Amino acid sequence: MARAPKRLIQLADAAISADRQWLWVRAETEDDQSLDLSIPLDQLGNTVQFLVMAAEFVVSEAEEDGHTTPKEPEAPAHDWAPIPIRGIAFAAGGSPNETLLVVKLAGFELAFSMPSDELSRLAEDIARVAQTLSADAGKRQ
Image (cartoon, rainbow, N blue to C red; front, top):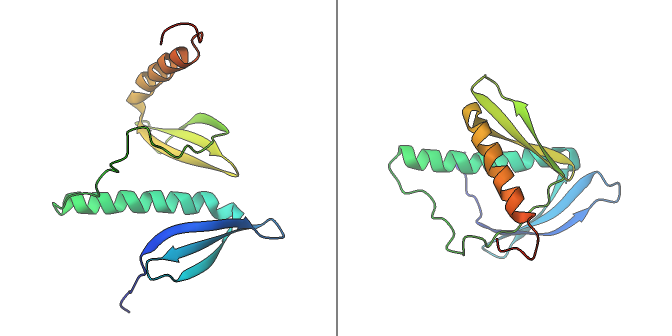
């Protein structure tokens, strides 16, 4: 069966079901149509992970085929939409060469894979940034 996907413009109008078990969100498309989605709250982490891994797949496929990858946004380097975290931790990966950076968010956790030999460098970077950001406000940073 041939696919005929609609172009997603944005996700909007987030709400929670009366039983507090489902996230409701509206998917708005390029042709002014919309679709209401209902996502189980216990699947939010899997949904986010799916989207991140789909983006990784698209970029990897484009690189393998010699195509240019999606352009980085042309916004200033620090024009992010920050996502509040509730905690971070490290966990063993699937092999001795892999460490997981686990980020706890509201209701779920995401695990990011990194080479184990990068862990000490990352710890030094975090310590350096923490010292800079927590410096006395009167001192020059």
